[in-house]
Image 1 (tube, rainbow, N blue to C red):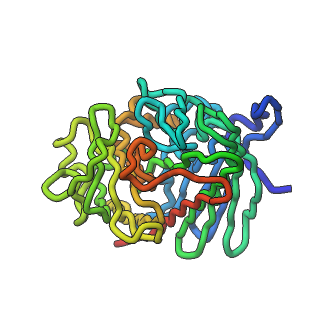
Image 2: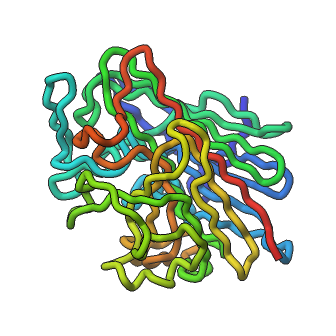
Length: 358
C-alpha cells in the first residue's frame, strides 16, 4: 500500500462519490512526489496540485503554488486553486450547445454561462488514485475519474486520467487523457495552478517577467465569452512576444489579464507556451504543451482568500497559464474542435521546466 501523508489538521476524510446512482467510499489524502530538490504535493480532491517546493537562487526552499492547509478548504474553494477543471474548461456561452443535431442544456454557474464544467465540475469530485510511485527515476501519480452520462448536462460517459510525473532537472509533466465510451462529447481539460515564483506568500506577481509565444488572441465580450474572431497582439496590452513585466501594461485593462492566446506553432505538436521569471528569487518557469491555446489569468477575482499558513491572497497574488482548447469552442465552428467521439482519445500534455538564474 502506498504511503500517504495527510493534510493537517485533518487526518482523513472519507468522501462519498455518487455516480450512476451507486455510492463508493474513497479516501481523500495528500500525496508527495520528490526528485532531488523539487517536491510536489497533491490531493485526490480535484486531482489538485497542493504545493510546489524548490530552491531560489540563494538555495532557500519556497512554495511557489497558492493553496490551502486542509482538504476541507479545498472542498470549499471557489477559485479552482491547483485543480483539474473539466469536463470542459473555461466558458460555454448560455450553458448550451448543439452536437449532431441534439441540443444540450448544461448547468450554468457563472450567470447564464457555464464555467469550468459547471457547479460540480472535475475540480469538485474525488479522484481515485490509480498509480502512485513515490520514488525512483521518475516519481509519478495517476488520478482517475469516471464521469457519467449526463453529468452537469454533458452527453456520454467519459473515462479520465491525469498523470503527474517528475523528471530530472526540475521538470514536471502533466498528462491528461480522456476516452468517450458511448457518445460524442466535448472535452477540454485544464490544470489551474496559481503560480507565484517569488513564493506563494510573497505578494503580487506584477514584477514577474512573462513571455508568451502567441501572435494572436481571441477577443471576448463583457461576459468573457469569445466573439469568434482572432486579433493580433501587436499594439495591445496582450503583446508578450517579448518578455516584460506583468504590471507594465496591466492598468490598460479593466481588472487584469484573463484571455485566451492562440499559440504559435503546428497544431497538435508540442510547442513552447510561455516563460516566466522572478528576478528577486531567480526562479524561472518554462511551459510547453500540445494544445492550441493558453488562458493567461492574473488572479483578478481573488480577494481576501485565506491560504496556507493564514496568508491572505489578494488580486494579482499569482498568475495562471492554463493550456487548453479555445473557450466556447462548441459554439464556434471556426475554432479547433473539442469533440471526442467513441473510440477516439483525448490527450493533453503540459511540460513545466523550472530553473534558477542569478
